[in-house]
Amino acid sequence: MLKKLLVSSILFFVAFPMLSQSIVSTTPENKKAILEEFTGVNCTFCPQGHAIANAIKENNPDNFFVINIHQGGFSTPGPGQPDFRTPFGNGIVNQSYSGAGFGYPSGTVNRQNFPGREMTNSGTTAMSRNNWTISANDALAQSSYVNLGVEASIDVSTNELTVHVEAYYTGDSPESINKLNVALLQNKTTGPQVGGGVGDNYVHMHRLVHLLTGQWGVDVTTTTQGSFIDQTFTYTIPADYNGISADLYDAEMEVVVFMTETQQNIISGNGAYATYTRLANSNDAIIKSVEEFDDQCAGSLSPNFELQNVGSDNLTSVDIEYSINGNTPQVYTWTGNLSSLFTEEIELPEILYEAEATNQLVISLPNDDDNTNNEGSTSFSLADVFLTNQLNLTIQLDQYPAETTWNITNSAGATIISGGPYSQENGMVQQTLDLPENDCYSFTIRDAFGDGICCGFGNGSFTLETRSGELVIGGGDFGSQAVKVFSNYNTLSTTSFDTFNFSMYPNPTNGIINLSANENFDYQVFNLQGKKIQQGESNSLSKQVNL
Image (tube, rainbow, N blue to C red; front, side):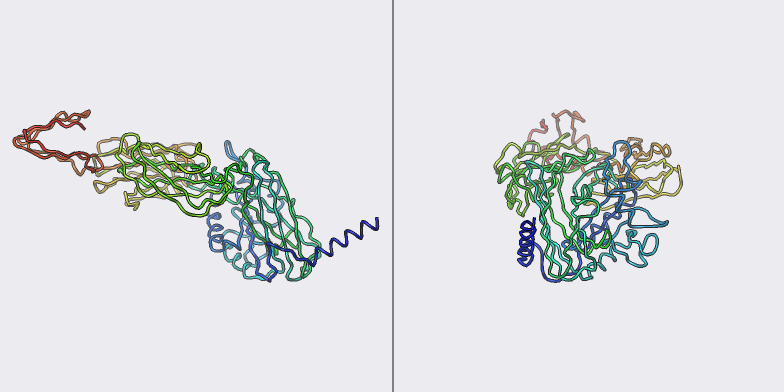
C-alpha cells in the first residue's frame, strides 16, 4: 500500500511542474463571458434574446459564448413541437433568481451578480435581455485568475466525442475547490419558434443537449497560482435527444467549458467546435440543400445552395456547374476554407434563362472523390401576370390584430406599400393599392405569433384581388406568413392598332401565328418579361410565325 501511494505522489509532482500545456495560455488574461440564455420555443420575445446574444457573439467571437437552455413553461412542447429540454435546465435556472419578476427570455452572464440589473431580488444573477450586452462587456473587462483551453473531436464511425481541456491558474482562487464544467451544444436545428417569423424553419443555435461533467461540474482541487489542469472526457453522442436527431452530418456540435468557484460565479471559460475523424473520403463535397424559389417573374436569378464538406480534408476550392431547363451550364469556382462536416451558404452569380411555365435549376459538383452525391435541384414556376396597376386588399382581422402586418416589394426589393400592425380586434381592413406598371412584385402578409389569422382566435381572412375581382392570393391559415409573387408586365400591350394596316391571328395562339399587312414589314416577338425571343421580316405582305 505504501509503495502504491509513493508511486502516485511521484507521478503527481512530476506532472505538475512539467506544464506541458498545448492549448491554454499561461499569461494572465481577462475573463471570457458565458451567457446562459433561458428560452423556449413558445416564447414570443425569445428570438429578440437570440438576436441580442448573436450580436454580442459577433462583436466578441473568441471571448463570448452562448448556452441556450430551453426550460420552463414556454419550453413545454405542444402537439408536433420538439422537446428541447434537458435534465439540467431546472437546476441552473432555479439558482439564478428568487422572488417575483422572473420571466423569459432571461439569462445569466458568468453566473455573476450585477447590482441593479437583477430581474428579481437583489443579489441574484438572472437578468432580462436588455442587460446582457452591458453585463457581458463588464465581464470581459474583468481580470481572471484562471485560463482555459479546449479542443474536441468526434469519431463519426462510433459517435464518440473526445474533449480535451486544459486550465492554468495565473492567480489564487478564493475557493480551495473549483468546478470544471463541459457543455455539449447542438447547432442548426430547424424547428418551430413562436415570434421567429419563419414558422417551422427557425434555426436553433447553441442549444444545450448534455453536460459531460454532470449538473455542477467535476472538482478541481489544485486552485493556486501555477496550477495546471489537464483532463480528457469522452462521451458517446446518441442518435437523438428527446427524439430530435443528432445525426452528425446534420448537427453541428459545439463544446463550451467553464470553471466556477462554487455552483455560481463562472471565473472564465472557452469554446470550440468539434472536428471530425474517420470520414470515408479525403476530398468530398456535397450539395446539402438548394434554396427554393418563389414564383419568378423574369428570366434571370441568382441561385443559393448549401455546400457541405463530408471529406476529411479541408475544402479550399470547389468547381460548381449550374443550369436551368437543361441549357448550357454556367461554371463558378468557390474558394474558401471549410472544415469537415461544416457547411457554407453560397450565392451563385446570376444566370439567364428562357422562362417556361415550370423551370428546373440543377447544380452539380463535378470533381471530387465520390460522384454519387454531387447534384441538387429545385423547380419553380413562372409568376402570374395581372394586367392591372390597381389591387384591392381586404383583411378580416382576428383577436390579435397587433400581430398582423403586410407589405409589397418591387423587383429591386424595395417596400413600396405596407400596413399594420393594427389595433381593432376582429376589425376589417379595406385598402386600394396603386402599383407602378411593368414590374415584378412580392406581397407578404405576416402573423407575429405564427398561427395565421383564421383559426382559434377569431375568424380572420384576407384577399388580394384585381379591380375586376380576379384573386391574386387569399386565405387565413398561413402560419407565420403567406407570400405571392406576381407581375403587371404590360409594356408591349396596346389598346388598339390600325387593323387596315396590320392583322394578327389567331390570338391567343397555341404556337402558330399569322401576320399580314398592306406592305412589307419587320416584326419582333417578346415574352411577358419584356425579353425579345424572336424577330424577322416579311417581303410578301404576310408571314406565319412558329413560336
